[in-house]
Image (cartoon, rainbow, N blue to C red):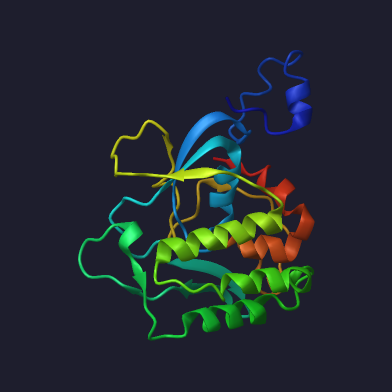
Length: 233
């Protein structure tokens, strides 16, 4: 079940029965099973859902869709939102687990350089720099393996240890709560996020739902608390 939008509201639910009939709710970690896509350097909203359930299944059996977070991430650069795209070999319909990254471009080096340039002046980049750099030294031909390794490193930074399983086959109507279509690289996410300080926010304003790297570099040890208080519309 979902709880009230603040712990204070939750504490007063008995006295104010209708107080909890709000438009927005915080996801509360509960006994539920969620199905998530596998993303590259996932957005903040993805990590909020990843943390909410006690049983997480990641989708590796779907046909790879283009122009999604599966091979791209968004950060906040000096000129605004910046997409980091992993070049892949994509010939016809292939499962996510079969997608190979291109070795002709030094994309790992370029992505890490872009992240350093964007966040070297942020409050916590220096503190996490060495750990974040490990993401881009991992060698594999598999997009899936690269992304899962990145999630493992990001979990260490966030001080979480969420277990998950991978799908064996694609199911159009899964038994899990299906979040595969809830994230879009082109549209605003269906989550309400409080604003926080960002390095270039004075220039361009607040940019919501970037890669969780943006949150980590700007909020540091407060990132986990922030993720646990993401609000669904």
